[in-house]
Length: 103
Image (cartoon, rainbow, N blue to C red; front, side, top):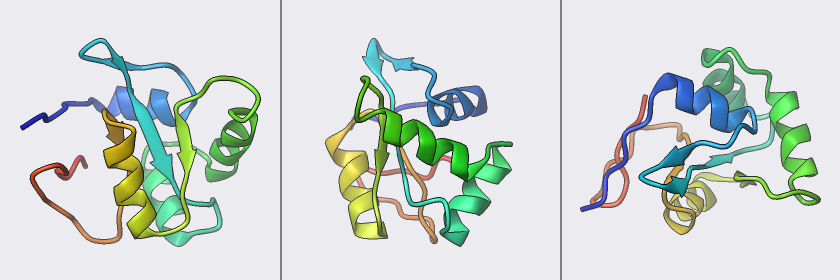
């Protein structure tokens, strides 16, 4: 099973648009729109502003970025799997062979 380990610094960097590499591969970050309560709670806990993350994601359509916008939990799970190694957040802890809680 492939499991990645990320630090809080890695989470802050990747959600800030700073490139992070895990095992030589770029780390991706999946997130929901900034008006979602879950997004606000997750990103604020890292000291980040959800609106800033959305602006970075919009810019990623122009430049290469590893920020991926999703709209629901199902898309979040799919995004994490599709962009491995990747991080994201959900309302409830979700643990499978491919997905482990991060923080």
